[in-house]
Structure formats: C-alpha cells, structure tokens
Image (cartoon, rainbow, N blue to C red; front, side, top):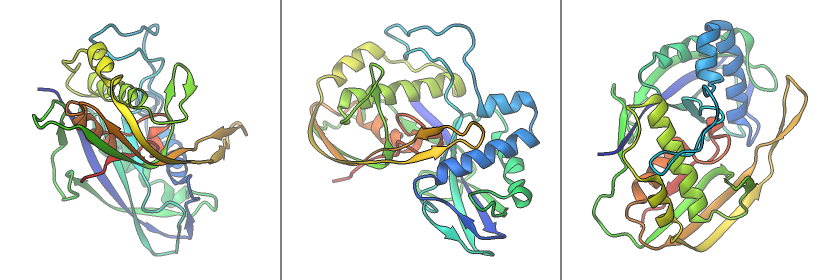
Length: 292
C-alpha cells in the first residue's frame, strides 16, 4: 500500500513590535527570516540539509518506475502563512504559522524551534519587527493536537469518480517542457504532483513508491479540463542579498476535470499538504479538492 506521511506543526508567536506581512509575500518573509536564523543557530551541514539540499551526482531522468530526475532536492518543509498574509500584527498580539515537515527521521522540529527563537532579537519583515515563539503544536489532518505524523493513502479507494473540481488557494505556477503553463491542464498538474510526492517519499520518507510512473502519467493524459476559472496574480520580490527581482506569482481560482479520476483523487487530496509547482516552500501551490 502506497502512503504519504508528514508532520504538521502550528507555531504560535507573539509580536513584540509591530510586524507586517506584505500581501502575497508573507511566506517569503518567513522563509527569509528562518534561513538567516538557521544559518546562525545550526551547523553548516544541517543548514545545507534543511535549506539548501543538493542532489548528489549527475542529474538522471527516471525510468518508467521512478519520478523524473532532480537537479536539486526539494526542501523537507513548507510554510502555510495564509492566516497572516497581508496583515500587520500589533505589538503584544498573538498569531500563528503552520508548517509541514516531510522528514520525520531527523529532529527538524527542534532545529526549527531553535531557529524560530532568534527573531526575538533580530526581527522579521520590512520593519524588522521582533516576535517571540510561545508554543509549538503537532496537529492531525483535522487540526487536533496529536503526537504522531499524518498519513494519507495514495492508492485508489474503490469508488468511481468521473468529475473533480479543484481550488487553487494560493498562486500556483506549473511548468511543462520548460515553459510556464497558462492553464492547469490535468496532465501538467498531476505529473508535477506525482513527481513531487514520490521524491519526498524517496528522499525523506520510507522509500520509493510502488507505482508505474509512465503508465499513470499516460492515464493522466486522458483527463479533460472542462472548466477553468482562474486569474493570474502578479507578485515580485527583490532579493536583499543580490538585489535581483524575482517573479513569485501564479494563478488562483477553480478548475474542473472529467474522466476516470478515481486513482488520482488521493494524490489530489495530498496536494493540499505538499503543494505543487514552483516555490512551494513558502506556500505557493496550495490545491484543494472541492467537496460536492
């Protein structure tokens, strides 16, 4: 049985100063502050393992029973910052950030907790507002406090499904054949999701998934996009280190698909927790199945 497991955490903070999270950039603000803090609090080896993981050896394209090759490994975490996006947190006010950790074999939660305590000194965001970490909670899929990882099945559940509606909650950016896709065609969406989940399982989880990657990709090619109501959001950021301007936007909205979808639904449900597409680490690519 193929499953995907991860740890869901909620980090509860209190603002010591006014803290601003620019709209569309809150995840990037948190990622930047965390990266700086991690560099100061962890060893070089741990910093590279968590924040700058690199593939060893040369890049290789995967055969039928493997995901596509990687130039660099996906980071073993992502942020969910929708609760604070675009907000200015007043001094003494509480707020929370969610994080999903994909490597349960390493003490990442403790490493993150140490790094998150540093913004009480250095601050974060445009005004360098200071924050203090007050609590860390591990949650289940329903948001209840627990002490165990979340586990999601990836195999079909047996009930036929001929139509699925997806909501792209945060800006999503998909690439196919090196080009940014202007519509979320199912094949592009699923193949990126398939490879992301498979690589997370292979690199940080129990090991490779038992699926035929080529065959399931060919079946994804038969699924039709029947309704597409999306809007593109233009968001840019300027690197404080290089001064370069980077695009970090994407599309949001809804899309509906038709075809034999039962085997894909578990993967699509997992997309809410893994993200899909580019820049998932700061919260892009949050996709949710719209329940009927």
